[in-house]
Length: 568
Image 1 (tube, rainbow, N blue to C red):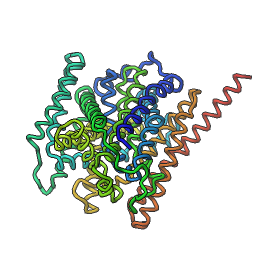
Image 2 (image 1 turned 90 degrees about the vertical axis):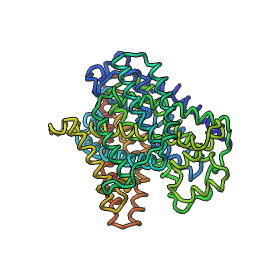
Image 3 (image 1 turned 90 degrees about the horizontal axis):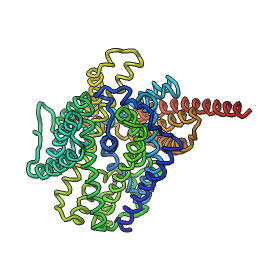
Image 4 (image 1 turned 180 degrees about the vertical axis):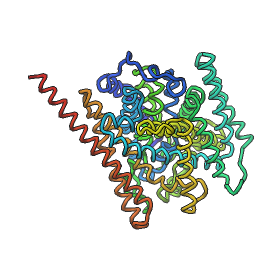
């Protein structure tokens, strides 16, 4: 199988999804209203609520949701063969992720930009909201802690990526000032900013930066993690127009160009896929493909984290309700394109089947390493740049994706804490500075506290509970789709377009969670901490599902009774 054929088919499917299916959803199901007053205008404060050009907002949403996960997940899942990963990414993007992300933005905009967790209280019940918020906060804490480790590792493994990654912050602030304070048209700041970001990659190659091996007993990785959380905490308090939004936008442009470079290299080099379509020799360490494929590839097919971003930051910046299709559905399409090229890099960037099998000898291998290694081979052979520069470029892409997700994640945690303070009437938690300290404090406790207790490297405690991410994330996606479905029934609109994906995703996530429970019990019995943590998450999710299911049935009966009364 030639990688070019796979790229063309996959991108065509994603394009068709946006061109036709998203239009149908926008007009017939969500029924977007161009005259609806969005929260960014009704509640404008120029800090969190800012009406934003849809292209800029697309850049923010795309880079905030497209972290390292759509690279890592597909890069691991191809161990079962490239075909299952390809089908799940393309079909999932078209019918699952797009509807989910688009729907989360729309639902939040229609409800004063409330997060999906808080919105659950209005749509389902206060009890469901309380349980949902626990799951949401845990997921955000996990994502932030682990992405801090991922970025730290990337900086250590590729010191040449440090300057390019941090330069994006300076460029973003300059663009924010130019656009919002000096009112400069968007074209030239975009062009100049993108050129600068690519130029500093050469500077990074010339001046690689490494931190000391130890400072006050902290190894290099822990130092980077502390720096990253200090930055994320500060960034979460700054107005979105000054850093978060322009950084995500310019990074989105840079990363979009990077995707174009990757796909262009695939078309030029036309490499063959050396991995099998269905792997007949899956290592014994690999779990069953069904249902684990659907949680191994979460981001890139569908991800509950996207609903948090869509209802947390994106909905507060949407200028017109009709922009939700472009921002939400197309944002998830961009991530699907990233996941697709990650599959190609992890299956076609190897000299032989034997070389590929050597890397994928154990489940969990591949991931980011396969993307960088395989992608660098394809780019260097297709475009003619050195393998080392291509590897730096791809590492910077991965770091920027992870960094923008971490920025958004800490800000979302701050929102959740503030919303909880409002719901439970705790004034101190409504303060932005206090809420940020609480959010960062929990992340650092997970990162350093768990590592100290379990004897892990300092700052890497989040990696211990990372195996729970896939199931938790997909359960959250299912819950979000169910909340949207209840909203649709209340409005008298068809809910099957969100309900069918919800059933499939939730079933796969619960099946995966049960499999993981059996594995944790086999590994450590009742003393395994992951066993109890996974069990708690499953129980919380089931309770929310039951509450939402009851609300869905109740609203459906009410709608049927109203229709019968009207016909009589």
